[in-house]
Amino acid sequence: MYNILAIIPARSGSKGVPDKNIKMLGGFPLIQWSIEACKRSKMINQVMVSTDSLDYKNLCEGFGVEVPFLRPASISKDTSTDIEFVLHSLDWLKANNSEPDFIVHIRPTTPLRDPAIIDLAINQFIEDTSFTALRSIHEMPESAYKNFEVSHDGSLMTVFSHRKELDHSNLGRQSFPKTYIPNGYVDVLKTSFIREHNLLHGDKVMPYLTDAVREIDEESDFEFLRYQITTNPKAKEIIFNKE
Image (cartoon, rainbow, N blue to C red; front, top):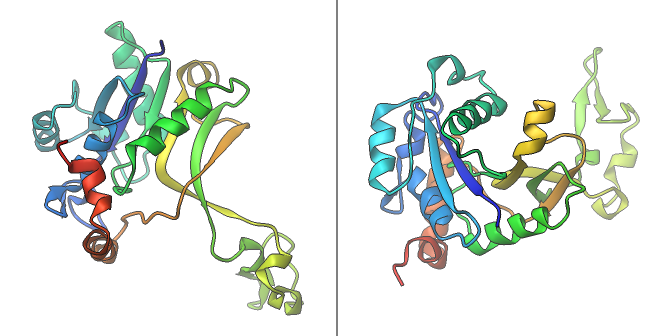
């Protein structure tokens, strides 16, 4: 049996949408969607929230999850990285004799999840030890190879190849490689790899393909997700039904 810990990061200093992580969505604070999804997982045996806010800590503990420390302000800035809060959490856990084998990184800004999909991702990763981490992705509706950059002279050029002759870019999307967007559905990390290399993902990351999901960065994303919940009640029921 592995010790599998879910860590939900919840920094309080969001500028795009103030207090985004506790803003209401479908009658529940945004972070509670991720907490409940983790609690319904059959693979995750511990759920922890990493936050810099005492208010967030008190709220999340009321939902039945561990918030055993407050994250230092020095690693809770706009410029702070994921590896900082993960290492901070691991160091605390190690000092308290409970360092996990695997970490499931669950971002509260991707609320519409199926706990069964989380479990499938965890199983897939731990069954193949050749990969350094797992990241969830979904296919881009248009290949990134059809996109442009602006060159130093102000004209368009293709990404990757930097060609200025753009007619080739008008070909159908089937003519280009498929490209994918990393999303916040689920990441699975290996504690031993993080400790050895001081990296979260490394150079052999297992792709985990999900349906397209919406991440919350601004108020319009909340409005879209509220619409999704209204038109597809199952998205909410799968996390919050009490059966």
